[in-house]
Amino acid sequence: MADDAFPSYAYFNVYVLATSSDNNPAQALFVSATGMDGRGCRLYVDSDMLPGGLTFVQDLTFYIQGVTYEGEVLTWDRCAYVDVPEVVVSLPSLGLVIHR
Image (cartoon, rainbow, N blue to C red; front, side, top):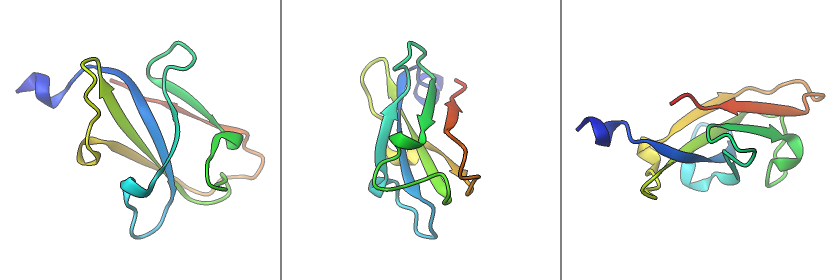
């Protein structure tokens, strides 16, 4: 059971959605995957990477979806999320670090 509860992850898919009262991760837009810089659990999100006209000057919810070494993509009910409140316009990027 322990192996199923805490699988080992190869990388994480990161999605974003404007925060609202009816957040539905299935409607979130893909941002990128961790590991593009050689580190499997880190992603710096530049404002230019935000899809769908989203900006850091609005409340955002980031969804973190694990992908195991066996290729299993976790279902939304097994994923994590983080709410990022509206921030200063001049913020150029946001760093997400996922601790295993």
